[in-house]
Amino acid sequence: MFSNGHIISIRELSKREIDFVLSRAEEMEPYARGTKCGSDLLAGKILANLFYEPSTRTRLSFETAMKRLGGEVINMHSPEASSVAKGENLADTIRTVSSYCDVIALRHPKEGAARMAASFSTVPIINAGDGAGQHPTQTLLDLYTIKREGLLDNLRIALIGDLKYGRTVHSLAYALALYKAILYLVSPPTLRMPEEIKSDLEDAGAEIFEYEDVGEVIRDVNILYVTRIQRERFPDPTEYTRVAGVYRITPELIAENEDVVVMHPLPRVDEIDTRVDSTRNARYFLQAFYGVPVRMAILSILLGAK
Ligand code: NCD
Image 1 (cartoon, rainbow, N blue to C red):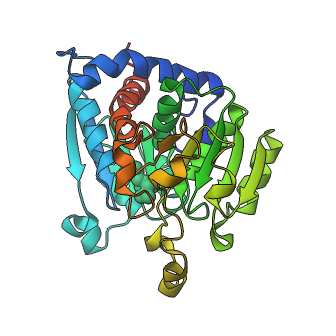
Image 2 (image 1 turned 135 degrees about the horizontal axis):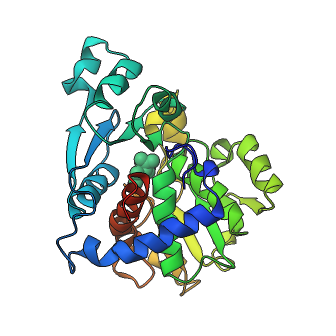
């Protein structure tokens, strides 16, 4: 399981491994909800959360997952409050922190940081987001959400928004290719899915279509996966202002396909109208909850707990 002992890119997981995580997550759900208590599966184990970028859901759901299984957590909340501010490099931080814990969840603004960290770590590294690169644990919880909707096979999904810089959609698209999903990529021309990823997806046998307008695909898909324009990754702020607010999912749009499921990795800025929250289509807060059972599954598998 997880051949190299780390979770760096979703591309390194086979479909069989992904399915195993999803079924383990299902077993974890009652513990994640707190309806079953007292698991000591990870008692005595320590997770270090090393976050060099802001996070709410990823960091807190990793922490909850560990604690629900009886484990402990140590946290580096921000680089400003740690020796990173004194100029320490990532390699030295990883060498040190890996001697304090059993597993590290790392979020970093540089693409490739997690892979680099893995080469210095004595414990498993979980990539909790590396720049515009990958976010494999988000993908696993996205897939879990889709599976719980009964849509994992024969999926027609629109990935909407910032497909250039959005790491969640990069990871998710690779995984969906394994499930032979039909991908409707909806973005402004400047934020299209990178060519390299598209050609990898096509090589994997995925069917891909590109659009600029959600209205063109709403009736053809069973899921809208909406993303935030990744302002912090734009080299030029005026480029951001040109595309900010281009998409807005509204109840009026959703009325055109009353069964469509609306997902979003969150945080949302303005791309989903808050009136959508109370519709039967919204799943993004449930999706955020699923981060707990899925990360419980990941941690228990990585740490070898049965
Ligand atoms: C995402 C991320 O950090 O990539 N957030 C998350 O982990 N749920 C999405 C985003 O920041 O837009």
